[in-house]
Amino acid sequence: CKKEFGIKVSKVNKKKKRKLIILNLILYSPFRIPESFDLRSNEANRKNGGSCITFPDNQGKCANCYNFSALSAIEGATCRQLGKRIPPLSQQHSLDCWLQSKGSVKACSGGQTFEVFNYAIKSKVCTRDSYPSTTHKTGKLGECKSNCNECVGIKNFKWSYTGSSILYEDPWDVITDAIYNYGPVTVSVCSLMPGFNLYSGGYYEPPTCGSIWCGTRQVDHAVTLIGYGVSESGKRYYIMKNSWGLSWGNKGFMNISADMCSTFFNPGWVTSVSMDGISDYCLNREPDKNEIAHDFVI
Image (cartoon, rainbow, N blue to C red):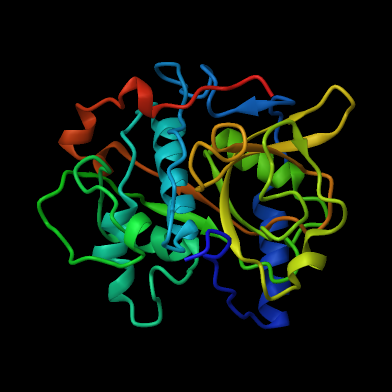
């Protein structure tokens, strides 16, 4: 599977879309939050200090970027909201045991992050070290294994289908508020934007609106926004976690402009997790130092 693909576009009627716009603007108004914030910083964990973000993994031959994005959001939300860092979660577990059982989803052929969130409400996700990945090499799913270390589930999440735009004329206040108060935000992007695949550092700014490159129905990749800031020149940006391994970008991360239109689609984040949703195993298991990402020099 080519790494550029992994998102399936859903349909929504115009009436429902208008309701979503109104609902979002009512529920999410800007609060007083820092001008810049990074979930990899020592301030991310409110209770114990330290980064809330694990290093990016590589989806390889399996187009399940949506799965990586959602699991990254769950990891970060557990840390941000509860002050409890958990080890990296297994995308192979959710593929084998959850996603491939849903008839309309060919788990390695794209999907949506809300599907992963829905399953995480019903069941706990296992840790990556107890259920390691095989699909990144083979592109094929395996049989569901029950002998893994269950880690965490969630109570609720928010996800919005946005079609050809992100619902808000300027989503900055909504997205930054969600990152600061809840944790990472999953979004869909167009990986065909010039320079996106070849990014290796600095600030990435699409040359024009993102939707021009993919079209309104061809957004093809899911990523996770884990921070935000304003550059010295006054340009706003998001810190983005990808699923193309550590050799891409800045150790798997990107600083991407927040000022270009139609770049981000279908935002989602975990709105509620609880200590009851964390297994005894993960309550007593801290991530290894080499599993946790820290903020870097841009």
